[in-house]
Length: 344
Length: 259
Image (cartoon, rainbow over all chains, first blue to last red; front, top):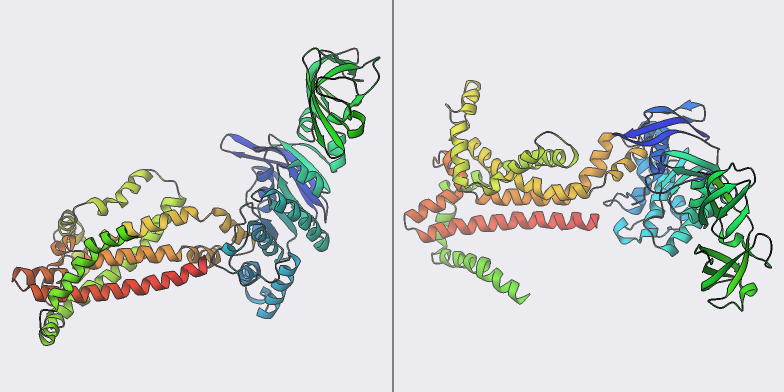
């Protein structure tokens, strides 16, 4: 199911949560809504789900206007951060709930429901646990139950609100892979909300970055990471050194650091330099010195915290062997390889 | 553990066994005569019957009241919240006199009901009214924290899965509340069975008609028939214990489902 969000606005009291947001989600896509807390990402998800209704704009499922249809009419599968399982029902009953509450001819037979529940529990790898109660499961298992329950109704779209937010790091990692596998197996259009950029970049086909109720950028993880369109995305996604300086005659300057900023008008500007874009280079045109303070090896990379003679703190990342003999206090000559510069 | 048991014994078990001991001073025949004469039987029926009806009424309205307090904002909410607890704090005699005055045939409410042929004060119906009054806070206050705990997202989950509002209430909300609800019911019932102060003013206290069992105990005491009073006490104790035991068993069973 393709989903179109057209100029959707929503305010809570006097606080605007969504500000004319437009977004197209392709059929079968896995899309992440990424943003800091209060950016409106959960509100957007709930508007898509029909758990919240917009003040303005439209929500389309395929060609159909669903702006004011309830969640049940939209046939969404919704997975909540806190699982929201029915505590007094077994795992199997939880999963069957969406089929069980159907009325008349739409309700499958007992045997059909049982086999569907079985199939779903196997899909989320909980085949043996149908008779347990939610309280007897771990957090990760509960979220799998919630996922199976949402999938039971053959949803037109699967919506997940911070689905891994309440889980510890290792479980989160494995469930992430699981979600990707389930998405690929079912092909259902999936939208999930997260504030964890690693999760969004690793899992999603496309990522929409939200900030203060507006979408800053939509793109593949690579586009978002390598070509941020604004200062917010450049600073929010990936690691970077943020430099507040000045552009004059196409060159950015702050303190001892200077590099080309083609096409940027003269005036105040913010530059974002990823740690690995600080390049070791023989002293010469455009280089500046950095005195290493702290060296932290991380796999194939060594991260160096340093400070320029002018007092600018920078973080750089190099291949391990290229800085093998560097000790704290050593002076490195660096060049800015690539920077994202945005006028302020 | 030892301390708890010691205190429990001092405060609860020893006085209760003293009651049983007192009752056992009679012969079997005397015991049966004191326990199951016509007047005593009517009193038990009224005490337990009215308590059961009152607890049932409180079960329904306490549920609605708790729901309104947890889920809705309305003017003077904190005032209403305070009023709920009044039956806890008010001397029961005050409540009894107030209710009797209101529901008497010439009282504010009684005068309205009289043309319809409804007599409340000085009838068994009056007993039910008084017992309902004192039992309400038990249901409301036991349900409230559980309702607050029942996250709104569970309802949203049910709705997103296609459940109607009625389905959601019957299959999701009420089953989740059931254990607490039964606790509240049991507490309200237990309190109502033992209630004395507020009832005697509104009941009229006519033997064979509107006389409650606790009053019968007092009457026997006033006649220096201590064994007879203890006998009725033992019967009430046994029945109450049995009923609370059954309710507890149901609850334990429900909790095992919910856990």
